[in-house]
Image 1 (tube, one colour):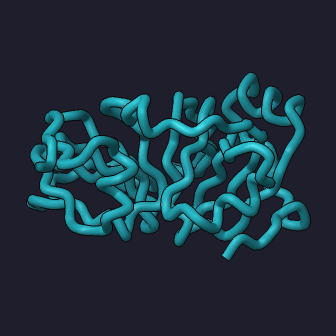
Image 2 (cartoon, helix red, strand yellow):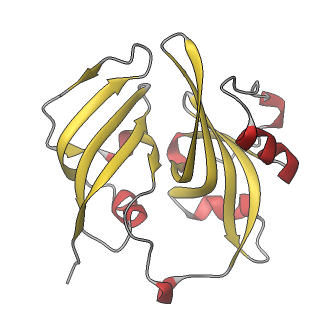
Image 3 (cartoon, helix red, strand yellow):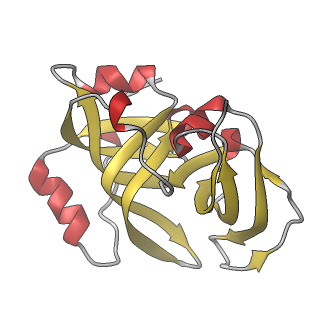
Length: 186
């Protein structure tokens, strides 16, 4: 029997430089599980805002295609304590389509976090900072947890704790992305 939770607020960034806001009912224990299933997610009150112009529109959609989403803000309940695995956190920067995500990725000890990313379609990044450009200026937003669609990730770099702290505390101008630090993950 599948449990239903919600409706919950849903916020996601897609590969077309748009942000989607909606209300969804989860048909699983966690948002990550629903996204990983890859099936269209029934939703209500969907609003799509173009990040380049900040113009919002109601597209008349009744479902969200998770395969088109690059980044999802984690909301809703955390997974069952019975299914939790002890992990170690490592600060990372992930280049995802037109976005850069900085934060902590978690992997079971003693695994290398970069080895672990190959096993998961969605990568949870905690204490996350999302950087992007829109409406003619750079944006930096903080989130408790972002879920990154690995199929949209162009690269990932392990960073040190001080560099992560710099991103977290920085103002609105994003730090330049350094392509030479990117390690291919696909």
